[in-house]
Length: 154
Image 1 (tube, rainbow, N blue to C red):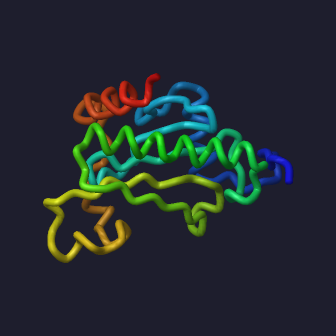
Image 2: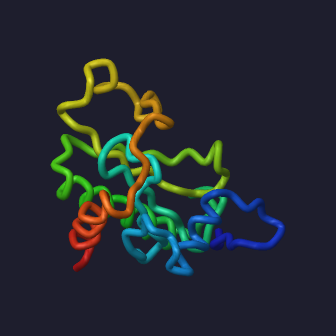
């Protein structure tokens, strides 16, 4: 299986647009470039430190990647999770890849905390009201972004 790459006939998703913004350096929530793609803080910070890993090039799903690229993407996802875990003091990290709403591979890295409300503590992260959550703010979240970036540096 070979690595699928972007082409002009492929649907331009939010993931494509975020990757393009990361490439140009204009994405304010950019944590850093990783071997397989881009680590970014989520636009909705429904849980402090919620992050995404975006592949570059964008592919439709994990199975569209060649084995070595897939392994690197999964390794980078775990490394991002390790950094978020270390920086936030989270209880655990949840990982998810769906691609149903945005049909382009992206990994969700979701810190979970001991002080979450009882009704949400054991629920999946999509049970949160993302529309009411704090949105990424480059001033408020600058320290968090910098700390995650530093934790990812070798």
